[in-house]
Length: 219
Image (cartoon, rainbow, N blue to C red):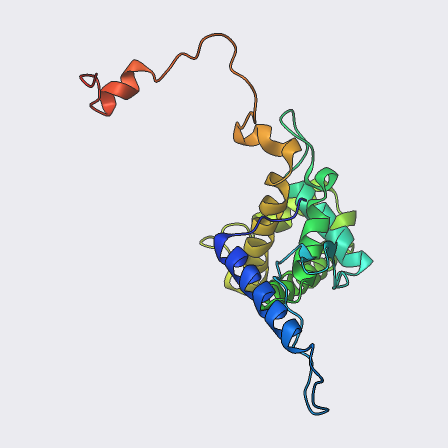
């Protein structure tokens, strides 16, 4: 995944912090009093990639939280949701499971909240798998995995006692899709062709669209 770009607000905040740091540095040329403390360092922080723009390099200050068991279950579930087909690879082939692990490991409020839902849900999923089939979720046959997921993927049809699984699957599916469709190898699913030239003369806007917009008489 590439580093996220700066928004205008982030850029202004960065510039303001740089100017402030420079001003503080200029004032510090004199002899500081022993009671004075150095100004705090400042940098813009982003979930997933947390670049240290003041130092000129990208750093990842957090450790991944998922256990090997949780990651194995995550890998199996992302591939069940987004299997390999003629339009693209399986989710695990583009690292969707690693994306989820990195996301929930980030030390931001939203990510921490997601982490509690995801990790708790993975535990619920494996408990349910053992209750029904005596195995971890990733060890089940595809039809057995589908049987469990089918009961938690439709909130309006799920049983009340499966509420934990329903909440988990909704959050998990969203993260799986986010990780999957931000990889260029999956764009065919979306019908996105990328930055490619159009062969021959550009045909222009279709006549039916021009008529629909009422622009047929515009010179």
